[in-house]
Image 1 (cartoon, helix red, strand yellow):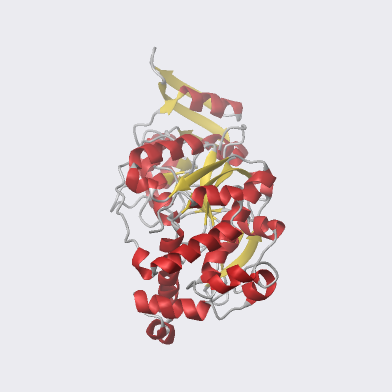
Image 2 (cartoon, helix red, strand yellow):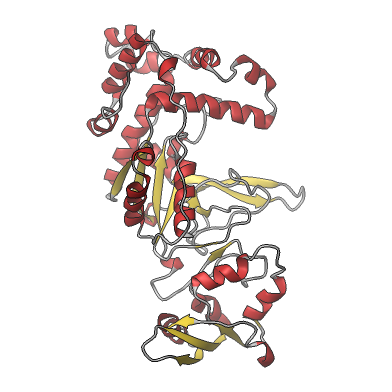
Length: 423
């Protein structure tokens, strides 16, 4: 059987499937499916010369009306079933069910499309500005982003949509699905969230001392969401994808003092999500609640027993005066291993500080887009500066924290941390 397909460029395709309040299920059959001749002109459709070339490479018979001196053509192509998916060459996230024969994605097989898509990590210790960065890129480019982790966003009732086709993409990463938002999957690199082994909070994973190898595996690991057909519930399955998929990384930093407080806020949010009222009452939001949370965190003596006692008694004494020293150790170790991971993998890495958004949002965005090779063709996104938490520590505590961070930081990590104002 052969199918007819009328070319749509990414922007028009996004518009076609993203119009609010419209029932598009029937229209999807007119775009891709067993079309009848009278259905061919259901909409004004335009394809580019490159689209025409791609379709003909896939064995499609195309007839195009190209205006001289212009890049756009009105094309109509008849394709074998096994070439249709290959020829489409564009992916749309947010399309209605049935828009494409095999879900939300279609993959191009000629070596330049989404089946050759590779990952650029957004590597971040949790609460460093990951969500804003992904939102900024998605809205500024109209391209989707990726994630290692299923069911953590707003859509929790749908199975994961893998970035790459099977079998290569079975282990992730996955498309970041956003409600009521239509975006196009990039052609070359997709910015993909990974917290490496920082994904778990201390309430879930107390074992936080890693090796370089275990850390890198954590960067490539996540969860796929699947539906249990018996219970009807969504479940998560552990996944780990191949390192060869990763071609770069954006290494995101946030001021360690602000990050520690944000970690407390994250655990409060997690407690609210599961109805842990005891945790919320014991460690409420605010300076006093944070101090109690730090004391609770620091009851874990692993760091004392395995590291400090055998290293530096002077530093051990100072640590007793540092609230949340375990959190600061997790933070600095995470960044040390992030540098080690990108170096060991031989991938380019861009350093990004969260406060750069406040200093110069546009130039920071341009730098990110240049690194991930995406166009700025979306809408402007404003940055709302968050609260600073310097007053949560005394001057003496902040002095000890700086000394502690410098002691455990690698040269590369300390170079970045030394730029911050700790006063």
